[in-house]
Image 1 (cartoon, rainbow, N blue to C red):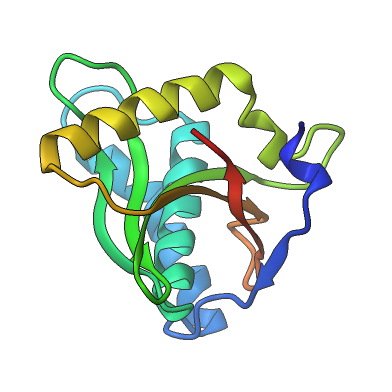
Image 2 (spheres, helix red, strand yellow; image 1 turned 180 degrees about the vertical axis):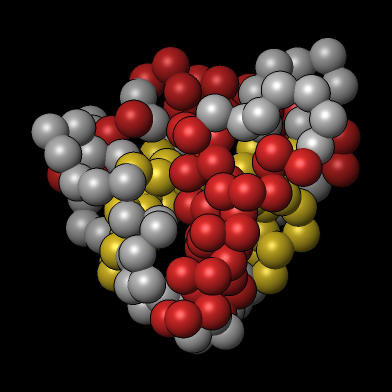
Length: 163
């Protein structure tokens, strides 16, 4: 079932970043990758990094306790964008962030297809096994549209899919 068929919760943009400050940070984020040695980051990577930053601050503002960002396991491809605890009692939440510069024919949340879900589930199982965590957990998806705008659109899909 596509995630976009579920009800999304619209989140306000992070209040810790005022509109002018956010615009300045967005412009800076586009320049910073060129300061590193080696190849500059592709535009899609810069957009994705902006989206993950917005998601991080929005979820924190919304009561999520972020415990890891861009978590990679040795010897495995891919990463878990955000890992957090949320709710009472707290549940471990694996958050996949999808960012688009604008809304189009294909929604950001529907990019989390069956193959991507399987991959995220495998990474989450490995993370839980490594940490010895056997409590409640779920997978959320955050879709962000227009990360370069002063007021991006942030959609949260809680419990978007199951293991």
